Length: 231
Image 1 (cartoon, one colour):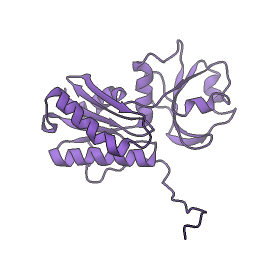
Image 2 (tube, rainbow, N blue to C red):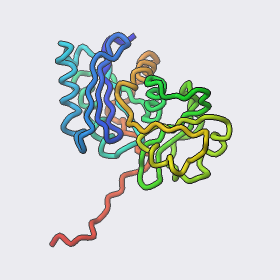
Image 3 (cartoon, helix red, strand yellow):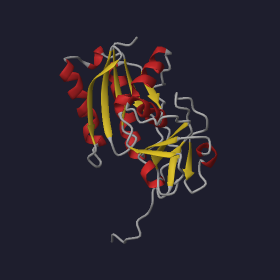
Image 4 (tube, helix red, strand yellow):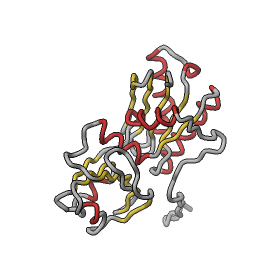
């Protein structure tokens, strides 16, 4: 088992980091301040290491959330993780944002009694979310994809029993998915919830190519031209 692993989660509005030591989270930092990812991620990492009296060289690996999620947030997190790995010659690991939310549902006791499915939702825009369907034990049943939520979405799953919709896209879907079996948990993914998938990746030696690894954007960022004339 790994001694120390750094965890970095920046896929949504919440910027968070965690330090795992001997299989447990021993340090955690987070900020929901808007656009804090670029200024706070590396600072949080240094604070955690200093608090434990260790250096980056004492860590066995760095794990980052790979998406889907915010284009800018993912770029910051992945760039920071790659920089740390290059500088200290440590392996890079990555876990999916939806997997983190499923693990978080279990870790925080959010899974309702008799739950048949967990549907993590990362907010996209308007009524669109990035989502997939999982079993309560974390097995992914459907592809991760963008989904425009309407009253018929996930109907077949809801008919089978309680379904937990979790993530920063859950609240906006609650008025639309008004089925009696629908349960909602509005939250952002946290670095502390990455511990189980990160340890699994480490034990199975599922390391990324640090030089070529890219976030899982799902949809490419599209730059727009302002309608306002600047000159």
